[in-house]
Image (cartoon, rainbow, N blue to C red):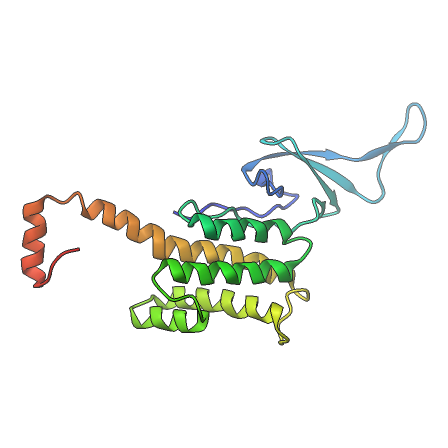
Length: 217
């Protein structure tokens, strides 16, 4: 199952905490900023600053109008629970640098896809060839598109190209959901199916084998 993720929006009572060291979906208390004119009169700040306090980690978000200005980062979902450890390390690094460098983030996610291809039995020397090989093995079209999106966008950030996520950093933020989608479809779902299939009684498995004319894995 993929990780639930709700991007921070000031009007929401709860959303995913924008701090990478928290990233928990939690209630967010809102505190408006006021200034004191004299001993008895207070006035709401003209710049319309608002604080949000995560009720899970108690860390502070600062908003100007409807824009989250601190922490200075674009929020991204945490890694899928079934993501391989070596891939998760790069994924988490990509989350940490998303706000300061969307280009670096996108390039790291491309590396995640390359490592995922190796996990799936490909060589890892050429990510485009690896995806093509997976397609010949029956890769679902939606997963192929997700892989190629991350591959192309990430590649454009380290080579001169036409797509620069500095012009639209939200593109980089959306790549995280695609990587989690890939892990869910190619790793999590097969694992769940295999675990359930292994619980079928042996006589029933033999019956299936005889029906299909081949050895059941």
